[in-house]
Amino acid sequence: MAIKRGSKVDKSFSSSAMTDLMFLLLIFMIIATTLINPNALKLMLPKSSNQLKDKAITTVSIQKAGSGYNYYVELDRVQGIPGVEAALKSRLAGQSEPTVSLHCDKTVAVDEVVKVMNIAKDNDYKLILATQP
Image (tube, rainbow, N blue to C red; front, side, top):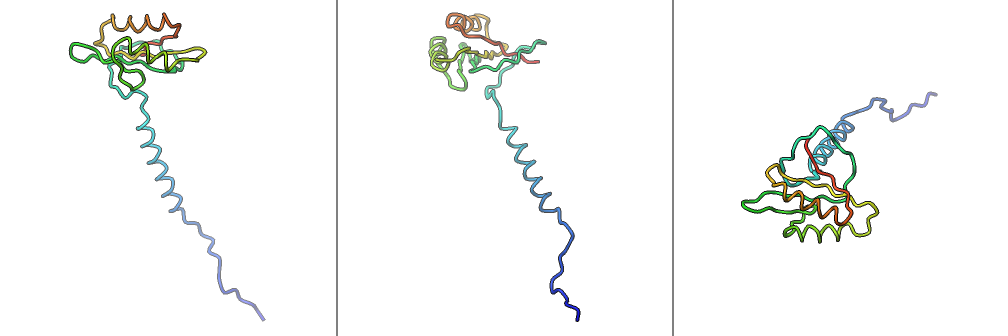
């Protein structure tokens, strides 16, 4: 007497579920990488062939606005040079080697850049001037 099995195992493999999953992961990665933007301010940085790869702890951005300038520490707007110095002191307190990245628009006067450089020198911060490759 031969015993027959009632159910047969299907040996084929359907890759459509795996393809859907990979497609969704690809879309997620594309969206996630476009949302990661360290500079939310659109600045026209000066060009340079030398690039330094130090990791800055915080950034200072200067943007020309009409007859004056807008100052940002990270993405927080501060009022003038004294506000920049106070914000930097609070953010960099206790850091062993504080590093500041300075992002300035091409239209910003050199006087404003020098003021931020003086803040960095007076407080022993390492300053990196951001440029465009």
